Image (cartoon, rainbow, N blue to C red; front, side, top):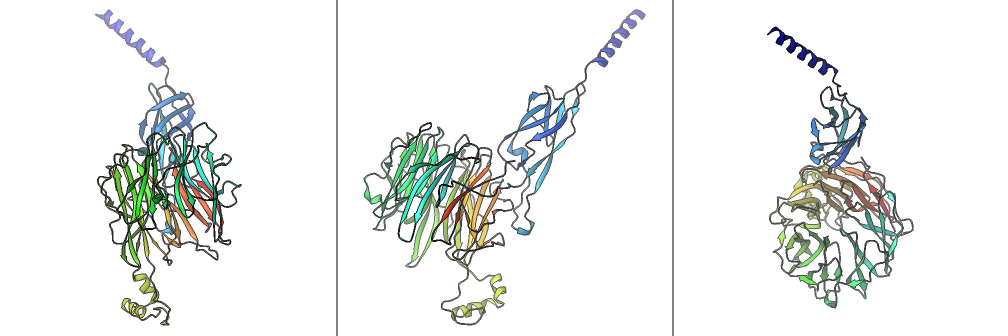
Length: 565
């Protein structure tokens, strides 16, 4: 018995010696993290952690959560950070005096496994509410007078820009169309190549498919009539195809307006256009290709719409075709209302659903846009709604009179400010509201309309437009051009023939309920943002045109993008 105890004691002692001599894993150290910051809720990205004493089994801990980690070397690890990892609370802020790009700090650490091991000293990683933008820079110096757009991005994040070189005076229009591409996010651009070299082209649109083929549509003016033409350039080729007249032989369709009613998905390409005949027969015409533009269907007609315009098209992931358009209803010989409608087809336009009014009626609604991430059944429609001017408290305060006194003076043809006669009654500025509605089931049902922001202007011919784009993480990016007042800020600067333009950017990470503080990325009153797009990483790109109204018409193309994080 005593001998057994001795043997057991020796075994335990040897075990303790072995444990004491077993090599202990080191505590890791972090030297840097790349990137060091990111804008909230961007698409998934790779985070690289540089340091020392990393090992197989090391784990990156991001904001307290262990991430699936790839071991690269003793000095480098990586992991994927999802949009949900970089969420932050964002509350809409329209107070220009309190605008700031708020940041949320989170910690990044590395944990080595036992024996020994443990957590490194954490380093800070910053999640930003909004983007910062580069100053706009001039593009395409050979184009002395012309505008840029559209801007499209392919699946490899290469950028394609259409450039129109124009010559305009009071009596005629001449135009040529060019293409330039960038494979480095806009750092450098290819030499411009000619697409259409005619003196009577107008209104173009550009598409790029998943195979890298380029599709180009344009309106060709002919003796005050017009038709829609199509050209393509296959990936890897240097020449463009001969133009194809999509309208065909039906001359009744030759009073057309291309606008932006084009869409592409896989081998399917859809193009639509507004037709306004001399007999006041208004309708949407359309054509379909199911073989990537090699052949086109005989144009169909979506009729009984009344006056229409501002057509937008979308092909969703399940193949449903959506058309969004403005439909005008005349209320009197001098007055009409416009409402935004949508209709859909599941059989390439052979049959259509009943149109659905999105804008809720009772007003004038303009410039609809579709914002779609490229997958699923969820998308949003935006539009501008105009409301006739009303006497509000600001006007009453400004004139220092009661509301009924102001109305009385106006009815008498007198200015409520000076009591002096005026040639016509004082008009009260209308208000403009940017609104949106969303669907999560491919247009079968729609959520309530939501107001994004209000606009006010003294000019009834309000020069305002916007662009909305949903990135692959579901964030809605919005750029707005406004003439005069936006977010309570009066834009500065003007010239002798035009009011100044303010260009703003904002984004929503919660489906449009809250929006970031607006970023004014241009202080030049002659800049107008013309197109916006996003790549697979959520980066935002802009085309701007700079208008010089000191001459009759002169415009130069510019480019801007967010500063890379």
